[in-house]
Length: 109
Image 1 (cartoon, one colour):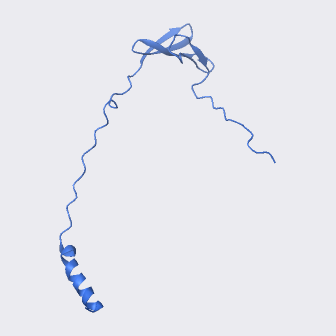
Image 2: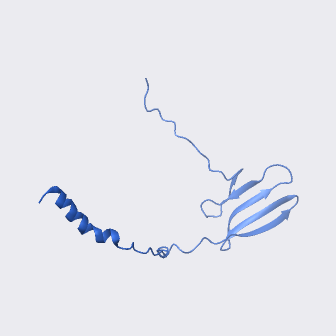
């Protein structure tokens, strides 16, 4: 067979594939989340108390106090947080994480 005959034979064999109607696309159903991942974090119970001129907000989850926000009449609010869950409150002036960048000397020229 000559090369042109091969081309003609391949074209005739591929013609039904090009003439066929394209398959219809079906949307994929939503995938359910893995077990144990469905439950959401409970919303905290917030109690607002006025102590003197200070506004005190107590945050509890399942009845356990984990944070207190104290807003004085003038000045910035501060937070009392129980980081370990043992009832010992630690004062923070803000809730942003304390970022400490490591400063090791790797090379010296």
